[in-house]
Image (cartoon, rainbow, N blue to C red):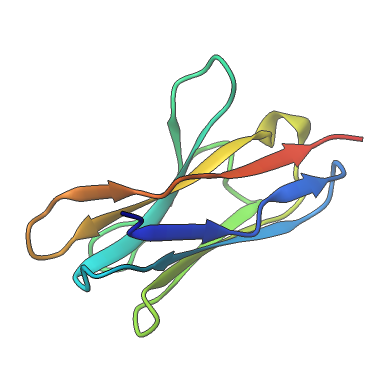
Length: 117
């Protein structure tokens, strides 16, 4: 069952922008999207940006100054605005969330971001 649904991936030229969105879906209403990770071919999954307890955003060094994470708690969504994209940003981007009642982690199915000319 899908609990987190991502959208907004695609192919973009270097220097371009994309906006990813993650929404909590399904029957478990206590799941809260909290951040974004990515996995490039042959590499481990890594953190891109996350909203920590208290609402503080936290970014990977590679994302600082280019990416912005935002959350709409009323809509249970987390967005990732990505600007000045580089070929090394090419990866499958995954939304990560948590069940605020049980503490269990949940992952979305991923959305492909390809930066190429």
